[in-house]
Length: 166
Image (cartoon, rainbow, N blue to C red; front, side):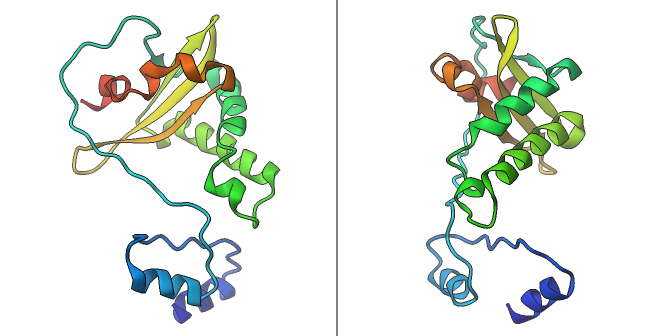
């Protein structure tokens, strides 16, 4: 770890994340011994997509440039329980800004597709989808307005991303 930390110091790196399996005692000990602290546990879910139709109600559509401002608004409020809000090295404003930039970057090509669900003709939820080199699909961000969480099951159901990832 010493060479990595020295390199970060020499290159003015202010934020470094140590990602490891939480059940790997040796890695956890190295992280703790070099001053890292736990702010989040990443959870990755895997599933095989069944070939079933998407329910017609609240069917997602592809991102349009006119959606961006609204998606940034959703993104800046949707992740208040995420690692960036729990990390004391980020202010709440910086964490919100990070997610606004993340969805903008995703919508402008970082993600292979961004899907949107509308409510009252206005975006109320989104999901970003990526195709990995091994041809597997990965969901990046899922953002939902607080008042629509109970109405966006189609978005968080894996069949939504199936439109693109199958």
